[in-house]
Length: 217
Image 1: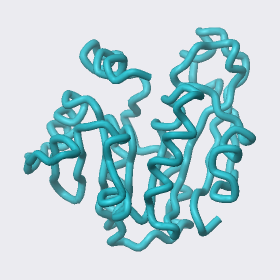
Image 2 (image 1 turned 60 degrees about the vertical axis):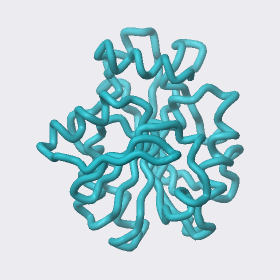
Image 3 (image 1 turned 45 degrees about the horizontal axis):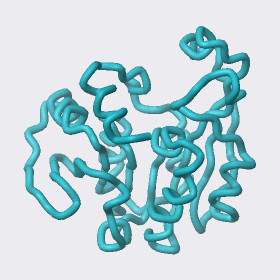
């Protein structure tokens, strides 16, 4: 989607995608990845997710990337943290308590930044992108991370014709077409009963899928 779409969603408070808790599937499956405590973990299209706080509490250096300065400012304010701030060619940086967030376009990051990330956690990025952008996103982000990287990817699977995204539907075959041998499905669960907003929009089936990413699949 265009940057203005997401910036407007944050300005208007249309952020139903934000969860007011840590994602249980992250807590369940992240430990099995055995990501070193000091590893740098990329969180693309981070918003103000509490998942970044949880990852930092595991000892990781978290690098979030987010277009909206409002989302970033809300994140640090809600944690009661006063971040250090500086500018670079990649955007405006905010950092505190093991979490750094770059306010900028993830497509503007290069190997100098992405090559320092040993792991990634993607709950909101891939499902936010229309089909035409996904291959470029995977190639740009994961193609510039170390070959030994690992991570978790969460997607949603529903009949795409029943609802206009975002979030867009991505089933197992679509994810494997993008990541190839670098992705393995490790969980699928029906969540429609827990997501009345989707049912209200006419969605008849809704599953969340969890994929393990990287060399350690």
